[in-house]
Image (cartoon, rainbow, N blue to C red; front, top):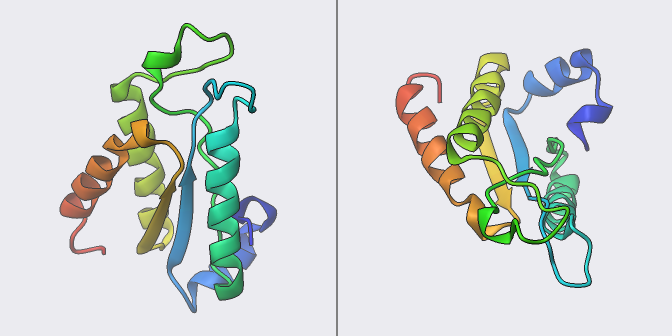
Length: 130
């Protein structure tokens, strides 16, 4: 189930029974003749198909990532490392504040590896909440 298709009352009811959620990470970059959204499309698809049988909500894919090495290709969009880690931290903080405790990240782009550091930092800061 997609979180963005749920209302807050449905999320509240879900959280009364379960605290898991999935965050797909993608990017917008060149992929030769494939779509600029290939990494995002695949991450969201894998996340949705894996979570569906378990009834776990999936967040909307974060379609922007770290792709500075592909900026020569029109349509590529990159974030600065600082911006990216701040976005990941803000997402995690919001999830924890609203009651989610277990998060699976489905990373569709190798350049997004710093997300793992953001997760570790957030977990270390919020150990009592997790």
